[in-house]
Image 1: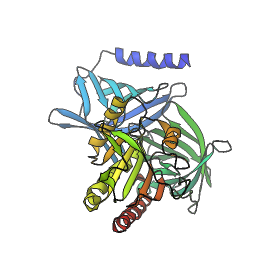
Image 2 (image 1 turned 45 degrees about the vertical axis):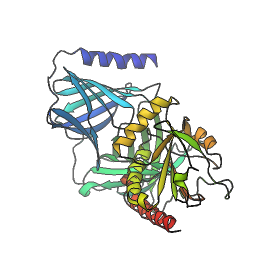
Image 3 (image 1 turned 60 degrees about the horizontal axis):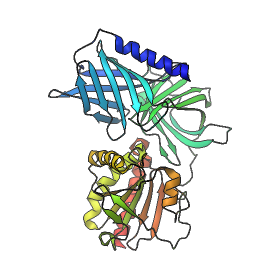
Length: 412
């Protein structure tokens, strides 16, 4: 372990010691890589564009249909440092011959949280393969198994789409606790390559097509995790119903909680503000990409239905128990998505603490978990996870069902 990290920092030192540096971050497209595994040279690629608003540079990270605008950028001399929006991660880099070289730092982690980074100017391919018109091996829905034949085995649905019958692909994985958001990649021969970087997720998927199945799959999450996976094409495979995973132990019980909001005011579900109003309770964290997608959606729902009586309360389970630090992180999320509903700081971290805090429920299996309450504050529905916009029709179905439920709650 020591030898590996020593190599990483020697590599970074060499990069930073080079004297041939540019003086300005150029507009255009870059191919970025995160070196997830130094020993085996495992790189996660993604692309971004640099544009200028006046003299201010903006970095636009691209994952399939997703565009992430990064505007917290500090350029000083040949140093270019930037923070990812919402998430507590950042890049520290220098300009060298029009390229950026440095590290990505994930402040949520204590170990393996510094990853070597490089971005080369004027390279547009995500993966360095030559595309062609091809047999779309990977098109459709796949029954996927992560960590097969182990106690940690779990199921997912892989949804892949070849772009205009070429080697280019987009897709995602749906699980019982959320989706893997926007994946983009390529087919090369009989191999599948997909990646995603959104500031929190740093995902790389590799697998082989053997004629009927995806085999020899590897999934990398940042520098800290990897596991095997396999899949077979199965359009009829379904996961457990997300509305049946978390439930009230006693159907007659009601939720009862009080926490501080971002202004240190105690907010309770029993406050007069919420009397005789339907409620959506969002169990979330600002560090959670699926929670980010749900927050963007709920922010719009609140604006549509608040004047008709709907209220939303978010319970934030952050990666820290430090109140001020938690407020700082949650505020970034609130400002990013213009959230007008209350976000309360629970002072707790993790699913186990969330389960203890909301002890009327059997368990919290995922962030987000969303509860829908009627005007009498009886729990009508509990949804585990969130099928975000990257899931396509699943997201559209979720939106239709949710808005129909909210309209019924407002009428009842």
